[in-house]
Length: 154
Length: 154
Length: 154
Length: 154
View 1 (cartoon, rainbow over the protein chains, first blue to last red):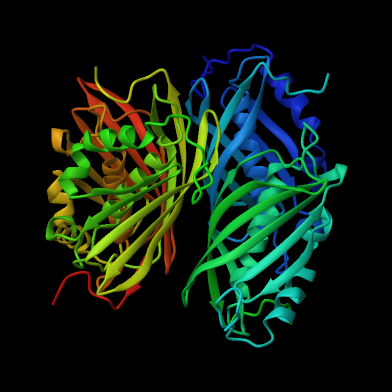
View 2: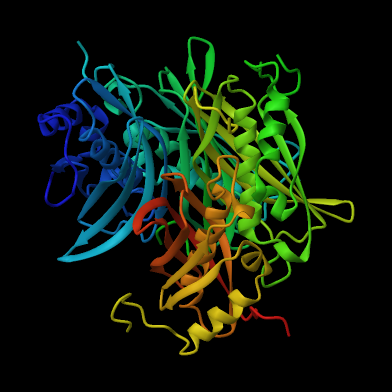
């Protein structure tokens, strides 16, 4: 059992599986998101600010905040899934707490309840700016495990 | 009152105001989203598929689906706001109904209840592929009107 | 296929199954809720106002509004399930649009997407008062079908 | 500032104000809910199981779980509001994690972000049974402060 998250992965190769899947998401590369931490039931994605991902007030677009939050939750869940499976977002809900006025965003997904079919995760996004950290979004997501369906193309 | 949506805009220049705001969102340009319809209380955003916005299975990334859904809802609400205001997403919730296996996505935001401070919108995203239309996401969003705060930079 | 809802029930005895399950919910009796309409993919629950179900301003309690909304969605989904199954609420989200200032509330659950495991429903609650109907809540719910598990006690 | 919750109430009489408001909610009395803890930005409501509040499988009804979760969140927010105000649930989202198979439920609402108009809270409901505690629901709620509107009847 992982000492920090309290979860025991079913697949010892969970980290490589998550990192490999993330690397196959062109949308994450488009916005410049990077996979930071992967632990059993936990995933952190970082996103440095760049002009291309902003909205009309110059902050990171709320939809981009949602993108990294959803992905962090999906990979937090996927880390606990068995080897021959893929992950599907059933639904997510996000409260935007403050404008994403940041040099760097850090999205953190954590598994709250891991079930065989459905896994519930919390999502938190923090804005880092000049050494200061501000919560900018919080949410909940329901993820589904599709057993026997490969995450990678053959 | 608009015959289709049933809403009367407070600001006759609502469409120009929405289109101008959308044009100032680099994140929408990054993913290739276009503002299609704008009506009082309604906004549609279209998104042609391109490899850069996909996930590991080759479909449009769920987070990108969320981006256009959130924006469509925000601009549906903004169309009903007074001239000197801006719009803030308080929260949104999205159910992903089917993989975004499409040549083109169409996100439709509609105002359900327009209040002075808070406006509630429904979000629907449809996948268009070879003449067939499939619902791929549905949701709800709460938008806030910030009065006296310009949407555009001075 | 039902002409109004567009859904074809798998179990011809769906209405009796839904009504029988509703009748076994003491919590619905406690608040005075009644099962009005049952159709394939649709369920309506009515709730006459009584002092016991109000909050501090004399309106029907928001949590009670949520109770009938959740139940209407659950039974809308259950109407499409096979005979030997039960229904589980995975999650729901509700926006309260107006105080439940009503003589009677009507909660309407409708299936949006029916899947083998998960079914997504919309929830709407309307306040009826003196011949006037006002939307008072709207939401979304995810329901799960538990196959091979009886809804009724043996 | 409260040492446990980290919030400083604006109104020193917050606890009496919350307890007085709770006592004026007949719906809470109907289900048998009791106000346990009140602290700045935190509220706990307990609910002993009784047959009247169950569903068809003999567990506490999911809608009743939602009722105490919504109320706990509302009063967590209300504890931070100024004296002459009332609280309105804008929306809430609840994931049901496990059947409420309990002798006693404990709903805990905590403020995540306190704003002048909107306050975001987390909701957690725990099932207590024979000395064992199981998380049975988790969620998020958005609460609104209505300034200058009394919570109590004149």
